[in-house]
Image (cartoon, rainbow, N blue to C red; front, side, top):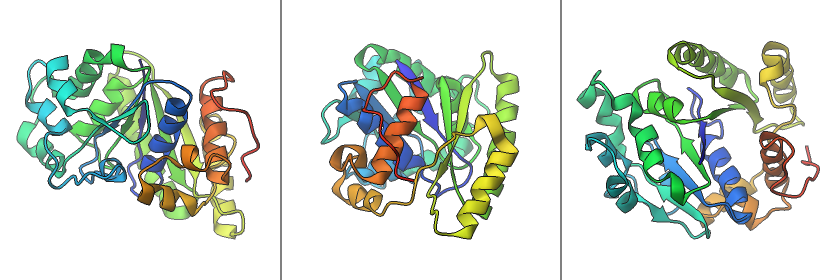
Length: 265
């Protein structure tokens, strides 16, 4: 199972949209795909019609299981309306884990153990991460093979990216194996000078770590969220969906899962 995490230490940059869009493309192409919500805000969980304030059981339960086995994970997995796309949901109780668990040994590997326990069920997993450094983000970075860092093309988001790259450098020093990571410019509006200047700054500062295209502003992402379906499946010809298709094909090294098309930006 390929495990990718989507993270940034700033909220509102398109983390959930990125996870849902890429996962939807893979599921639509016949790949068994799991979405994992590690954000206490539960945006990914809410996307598919669940209330993270009241939903039980959720991924929170895994942090109180020892050791984590398939018997703990499988009852938590919920299907979505998209065939081949499942959800491991979050609850707001996740926000209490750092206080509850402190520095308890082994709790940084809970998600890694959980995904290993169900690895035969899925081809891909996407982890939607919280915007704060803590036990949940550490778990995601310990579990994943690849990290995607969405960054909104505006000045304040660039500051958040600086924090994320410092955190990543710190994590990589303690990680036994390298972590492939890619910065993805999101919410790009070519009509505004601010977006153009932010993109220029990203290219100057991050060079080879930056995807060479962008995810454009597209109001249909919001409508897809209201419907609880990935935009990439609901309106695959939209410019936002085409951009994520191009991103996925890039991530897969040219082994196209979806037809190669211009991203409309």
